[in-house]
Length: 74
Image (cartoon, rainbow, N blue to C red; front, top):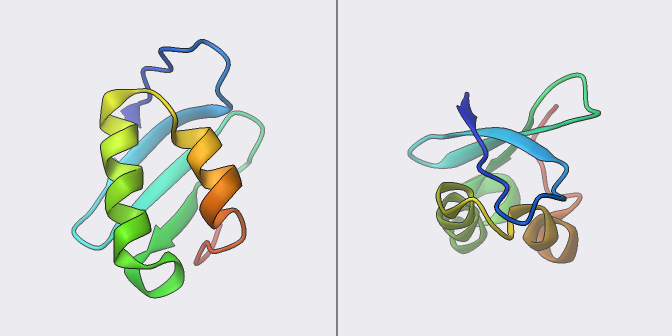
């Protein structure tokens, strides 16, 4: 897991792991990561989430607005 930079200081995201066709996202109050894949959320969303995760800003908001329930598994 790579630590999420959280530049805004108020994100619920604490970490992520980006793979070829997925991203796993760890939230501070969740017991396990959420996996968003090309199959579950779509490649455009997953690639955008990877960009935001690496930038350390906007990932939680993006998930809430665009892919909240489109995770593969927790």
